Structures are given as C-alpha cells and as structure tokens.
Length: 301
Image (tube, helix red, strand yellow):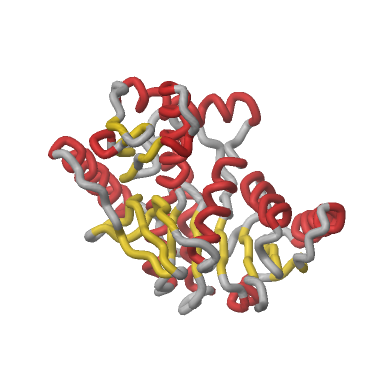
C-alpha cells in the first residue's frame, strides 16, 4: 500500500518543526514544502533530506508550489504574515489582519481540494473558518483546542502526580482568551477531577508565555498536535482530537471522533456554566470574523 503525500505551506518556525517531526516519524511517503521564498524551501528540503537519510526514513522530500498541493492527501497550513505581536490581550488574534488575506488567497487557489486540510495559522479558529468557506473543502480542521487540551492534561497530571495518559478531559471553544475547560467531565485515573478550575485555567494561560520567553515562539507543541491529527485524518489510527470545525454559524474547537479517517462531533456533556462560556466564545469569534480584512489576490507563505 502506498503511503500518504503531505504538503506543508510555510517554512517558518512551526513549519520547520512540523517538517522535522513528519520526517522523524516517517509518516509521509512524500513530503512537499511550499513557501513564497524558493531559497528557503530549497534550504529546508535539503536539510530534511539529510535528516531522512541519517534517520533511515524513506520519505521523498521536495519543494513545490501551491498547484502541487492538489496531489497531496493532506495539507498543513502554517503560513505567517509579517507582523510584530504587541497585544496584551487576545494575543493569538493579533495576526488576523496580516494572515487573513494570505489565507483567503491560498484557499481560492486550493478551491475544491479533496484531501484533509489542517490549519495552524493563528488566530486558528478564524483562519480555519476563512479557509473552509473560501475553499469549499469538506475536511478542514484547526488544531488550536487540540494543543490546549494536551496542555490541560499535562498540567492536571502533574498536579495529581499521575501519568498524562490517566487524565481524560477537554478544552474547547476558542484557542485563546475564550477557551473553555470541561472540568465537569474530566477524570483522573477514572475518578472525577477535584482541582480548582480557576487555578488550572490560569496555569494554562501562562504556559505559552513561558515557552515564548524561553525560545521566542511556540513550535514543538503545535507540531505534535498536527502529527496526531494527521494520523486520524489520514485513517492511520482512530480516536478523538479537539479541532476547530463548524459549530452553528461559527468555527470553534470541539472534540471530533475519527473512525477510518471520517470525523463526527462528540461534544461532552456541559454544565450550564460551561455551556454559557462556550456560547460566549462563539459570540466573540462571530464578532471577530466580521472584522477580518477583505480577501486579496496575494498568496503569501
């Protein structure tokens, strides 16, 4: 059986980290790197080819352009516009003005694409919606809540002094200030979690800043979230991933159950307070989407 072909759009910090993770895992039979800077693409591909040989990975790694993405089974979009983030609140939304036009132009170029598309570009819930609506692709997923849920389980496992695999719980809603911790259905070693949601939510908010202060930009965590989601979306494994998908008239993060590559929502039971916070996230994202810049013809990666 032939392995999957995966495309990556963008070769910045996250795109590079993701490419390394894909080659190290030997997941794709073919890896295509597309970016607006041909020298950057060639340099990254050459470096990845060295890694593949040293790691005994048989992936064929190539540089390509947007048209070549139509031949891939899945495409990961990690493009980032040129901007300096000085926001103190709604930090992940700061890139909306810079990223939305490029995301929209790319979506038009990939209109009707039949594979799975995974959006990493922030603000991920808004960018996933922009790409999904403009491209008319049926399988578009944003990975924000996936990463939030991973961090939540790690922090709770550390507090409870258990392995993260013994923690089951979700963070849904926006990948940002309106994230919703599903504390009422969280379990630790099969028992209901007893930790204060407020204190854990504060630790969850601090975690990205801790990473940024040390290495400048979050990159490895999103790569892990993408890798796990790719395995599900390509039908290589089954399970649940928290992903940004249509929810009423907005896009936000909810758990999706994958079976044989096909996904269906599996939102947990919510308390009235959790439902209210989810509705607040939806309202905030709905308003933010109306303020996105208009589409342009420029494709920037």
